[in-house]
Image (cartoon, rainbow, N blue to C red; front, side, top):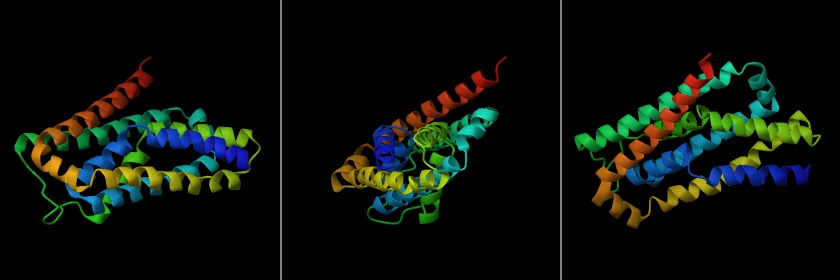
Amino acid sequence: MLEAFILAWIGVIAAQASPGPNMFAVAQAALGQGRRAALFVVAGINTGMLVWAVGAAAGLGALFDALPVLLTVLKFLGGAYLLYLGLKGIKAALAGERQVVRAGKTDLSDAAAWRRGFLVIMTNPKAALMWSAVATFLFGMGLSNVQVMEFGPLAVISGLAIYGSYGLLFSTSFAATTFARFWRAIEAVFGAAFGVLGTMLVAAGIRDIRP
């Protein structure tokens, strides 16, 4: 079991460390809202990881194989949510709606920050595919449903370390000063990044339903 866990964990760590919606969500919260908001986004992401781990142990991969339309629906939902975040960021940049939080209050509550992280990972079809692959690998190594579920906390440990590091990095005084100076450009970049990712997911969903 230990060997299977280590091999699967290496793959999960590589996926967590690569740029994507999770990293962008944490970085955006850290720069625009501060460290506390970023860490609550991290908490939401890792809560979602546990949900995916439970789903993987319960036969998530087999469900997606039997009903591929579910993955298509997830692509549309994930794409729509990322497009929403992208439009929100671009609108703020164009309208000049600067969010100064280091010396005042943040307009993103703890619950809202957690919810953003949770929704980003739960509507990400790549997360669904990754956990399906992890489950397939672990089951193929002879592990039971309970053992596959026990892999979830390992993913959370690395997720807390990796995304937490992003949150701390992007909420340093240097990052705050840089954001205060170039906040409109940074918001526009994040908005564009979320928009591109969302568009790609929606396009993938459309390709799925084309005859």
